[in-house]
Length: 385
Image 1 (cartoon, rainbow, N blue to C red):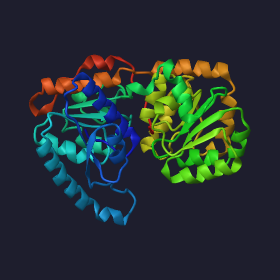
Image 2: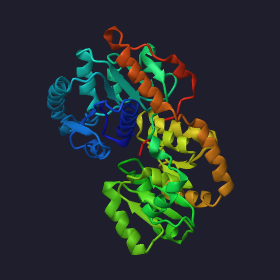
Image 3: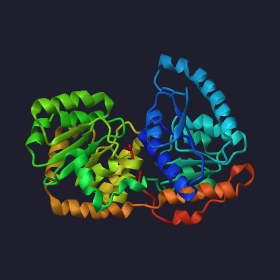
Image 4: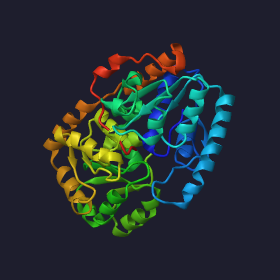
């Protein structure tokens, strides 16, 4: 398994690995990530071994760091080749990110079956470059033949962790985890696994207003903004705001939330759909081809979410969420409409494509895609948790 850099690449990889292990408990799984990236901590926490490559991003703007890029890429190709030769995988799966490029390229050269899972409507550079070399491409959107060979595409939706939905018997544990009584509605706010500057600054500027509101707030800030937010919340005495650097028990946080405020990346939207959580979406304006705004608009048009632009968030976001959280009928309606986008069996379908590759590889590593998967509606595109 290879994928990382952000939670949007890491957590789908973990979900697929968990499903493969459920199908065959004896399967041996090794992750390959990028040294210094979050997968080097998140993957071992999920119970899997990971090896790091020295690969890094190529900066589109003029940067001295680009001088090191070819050397890091070469070193990564060499190490990836060594890892593949030593581990001897029967299948290599990539979910995007810096490290997946060298690993899948090496595997394809060696004739090992390969699978790419693409979360977004606009695929990343790594997956676009790999598309012609891999055996199958599991995607969440229709019309991906703009980027990928049509005969390799299987529309499955995005994988989400099966433990996201908790039974009622664990609600007491969820409340205890966040020290929430359940007497007030809960707003969950996160901007992806690394936080989101606009969301953080919007909340920071209105901590006094949130402190006076009859709500509980779970606020994931990411590492960079954590201390600043925590100190301000403590100074303001805002006991109804729980500031978290990172939420590991995301299933508990989701279970408690009556409303979610988040970016509109592929995996986030997939999770919201499966769980039926109404949302205020603040698309990342720098996303490739503005795909987050397009994702969000799909949900807004369906009545499942509210849109606040990144530009307007500092002035409008907190007022919007405090107004919406008190509109119970609208929240109920939004939740029902959100579930219409759900593809809860996506990870099972992806695992089946993987098993088909293992059992029936064609010459060149190309599988016979299960085109029955393409009949369902795709999950619109998450900055994931």
